[in-house]
Each structure stands twice: as C-alpha cells, then as structure tokens.
Length: 202
Length: 251
Image 1 (cartoon, one colour):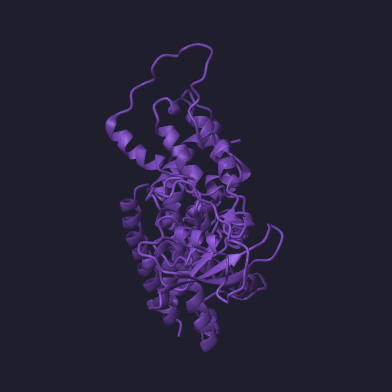
Image 2 (tube, helix red, strand yellow; image 1 turned 45 degrees about the vertical axis):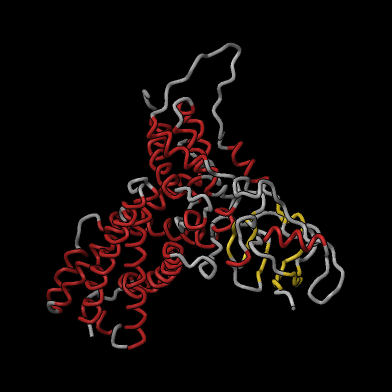
C-alpha cells in the first residue's frame, strides 16, 4: 500500500474535509441564502435540491459517508492531542486548538441539525421556510444555530489552510501566511452569508 | 553587606517510578551566571532554601555552548538549553522542570533515546559503505549547501518534541526533529539516491501524518531550524511518493 494506515487515513480525512464536504457546505449555505429574498424563493430552491435525480446516492456518497468518516477520524485526532496553548500561546497553536473545538461543536450541531430537518423529513415532515422559521422562533435555537454554523464555517476555512499544508501545496512560510489571510477571508465571507441567512428566518 | 540571592524552584524526582516534588533553593548571585553554573553551585553545597541538607540536583550537560542538546529542560515554562539560559535574564524564582515528554531518569535528567531510535527508523544517514571505493559522489550546489546547513544544525535536543501537542503518551508521533533530518538527507546529492526509503519510513505509523500543524516546533527550536517548512516539503514529497507506491512508476 501507499504508506501506512495512519498516513492514508489522515490524508483521506484532510481531502474529504474539502472535497466533498467543504464544497457541499458552500453549496448548502449559498442555496439557503435564497431565504434572504423571500420564503417562496427559498422553497423553490429547496424543492429543486430535493428533486435532484439519484438524490439518495448523492446524499450518501457526497454527504453522509464523507462526514461520518471525517467526524470519527476527527474525534480520534482531537483526543490524541494534548493541547498546550497556555504554555505556547502562538497564533498557529491557538488555531490548532480552535480547529479541534469547532470540529466537536460542528459535529454536535450537525447531528442535531440532521435530526431536526432530514430525519424529520423522512418521518413525513415537509422541509421548507416555515420549518426553519419555526425552529428559529426560539432565541435559544438562534444562538445554537449561530454557534453551530459559525463553527462549521471556521472549521472549514481553517481546515482549508491545513489541507494546503498537508498535501504540500503551501510549503514556504510566506505561502502559508498568504494562505492564512485567504482562508480567513473565506471564513469572513461564508460567515456573512450564513448569518444573513439565519436572520432571514427570524 | 548582604549578597544578592537567586531563588530556584526545582521539580525533583528520585527515580523514574517515584512521584515528582518541588524543592526550593537560594544561592548567592554571581555576575553572568547561567542555570548550569547555578546547578553546579547547588551541587557544591546541596542545602535547600529551608537550610536542610538535601541530595544534589541531577541534570545532564555536555558542550556548554548550545550545540549538543543534552542540557535541555523546561525553564520558567519554556523548554530550552540551560547552558544559554542566563540567570540575569530570567524572572525569579526560576522554575526548573524536566522535559516530561521524555522518561525522567532523575530530577532534570531525561532519557532522549526515542529521538535516536526515530533517527534510525527514518534512516537519517547516507549509505556509502561498500566493498570497493565508489569514488566521489555528485557535487552539491553551494546555494543548496547553505540552506541544508541550517537543517544540519539540529542537535536532537528534544525541545520541539516537548513543545508539540501531538507528541504525547496518546500518540506514537516521532516528532518534528527526525522529520526535518529526512529532508536534510534527501537534499544531499548522494543521500537523494535513497530518498524513497526515507519517505516510506516517515509514511509509516507515528510518522509525518501525525503532525497537526500547531507549528510550536518552529517557534521553539533554539537553532531556528525551519521545521514546519521541512514538514510541508515532506508532505509534498510523500504526496507524490504515495501515488508512485500505489499506481507504480517508471521513475
């Protein structure tokens, strides 16, 4: 094989975070942004996504399995680390910690989010603007969604930075610095998109 | 006239099995003293701050000029060499601890064997032995020699392993130092001939993939070795190596 199990798993973990999970995340946030126009635009977009052909295969291979692998292996990585930011308060070390914290928050959030929307849909509920407006009518859920979505977006943006390092795309310190600015730009951009969407349901 | 005193709080441990404990010392200040000369002073007169006779503190040292790496310890929270830790530049009380990432032998002395084992594992040498004279190897460009020299400054001191959040008892990560040595020997024109062996060695469990990019190593390295650049460069090399291994290659 091409290297040990650890090596392959770690590389697959890194790759899956961007392709397909990262791409799915961006697509999901962009489609949801229709909510800022009006309820009808959101429902139309959601219905279009719902009626894509081979949906169950797309969902399984683009969303469920990659996220499941990324989550399980991610937890393994997280609990392997012995964080030491109090002793070594360097920027990258803090990002290292935040990446792990946001990863765990995102996992909890996604589990709840899938239960509340996709699983309820399987039980016959209709996924539409009203469903989200109903969920977000509670201030607690608004806070939960803000924290969850922002964690997911940060985890993706910073994960993109480490993806570039892990695959050897950014080698020099300068390239890694530029990539820090670019990926934090991605975080800010996606954060604006997602926060605007959440508030569109309120 | 009362002499100025220097206060030390030293983490001590009688043997690898017993629990560590703290002991305070106060020794007379001398100009330009470093942590090692202070430890020597304690060894000369092993009496703690309470005035009780105690055992002298054990530590390791070698070159006394920050090139051997033997005297590394955690000084006021940061791992570094005690020979270049000048007392006048340190906040008091000066807290000394062993680098607990490694097995503690006694007091501040640790066992860095795992680093030397890792160097053997990644084949951090250039094989040139044969049954006859192979003649001179290919020349190394001067520009390349200059940056490779920076990597060769590694003294296996263990500071990068101590600073790394991924080198701990939960993980079998060999740490940044041996990885950077792979880059050094792969950069050498003769060493390059065995490049694949070293790359495959670091693609094994506990190797390159265990790095989590906290980049504490490059911030902590006393020799300023670009460890994270080495790691990223090896990430690139192993990306290609993994594809070659899997799909085969005409080289």
